[in-house]
Image 1 (cartoon, one colour):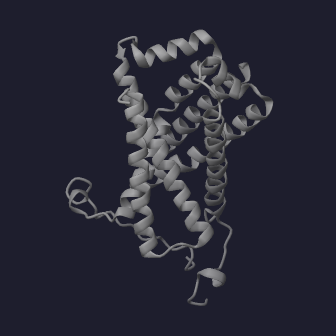
Image 2: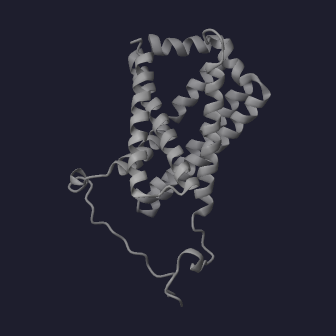
Image 3: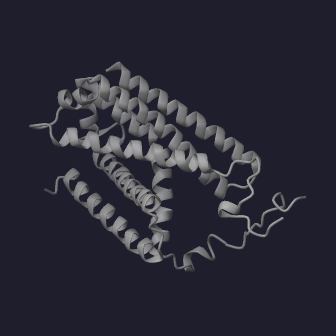
Length: 143
Length: 122
């Protein structure tokens, strides 16, 4: 075996239930895992997203049905639950979008210091959460 | 063999090092981010309330259809790279991983087909 082809080391000493809750994740790490979780969420809910896109552009009737799904409900699913799922998608999109821009900025500007990692992670969380709150309040008719 | 095997001294063998996917993730991400801004701008600069006519009208123009089509394909590839990373990190048994990879591909290609169909019916 050449040096390049040797077996790579494996570490499996982290127990998800015993160790992860006590690990202190830095804020950049929180943004990173949320980037992954938000992407996974959008992957799972992709048929719902496309159904909404389809209904919204196909005809006036399907558009009205989609509006009704959010205001009154659809089938056994109440309208408030549809709004809650939409809110989760809004958060996922915003977080993934902003965290993605952060990655692009880091790549283009070589901004890879520890300090920048922390401060930009805080900005990412603050922006995504506050924008989600603003849009969520609008969707639930608070203003 | 020299002890330094990174940077410009790295000895590159035939295997892929993930650069292609790394770059594709950024290129497709940039395209989708631009699409988001363009769509948002059209929504914001529409005068009056947005009903069906205004909303569908945004996607009806040919250039917007072509752009949306490109974004759907970008999304397909972007999500494939991302999901494959997730499965590779957390799922170790090869058989399970293969099943999940196939599921992901079928799920994504099905979704992309549906989205393109909805778009081009308009």
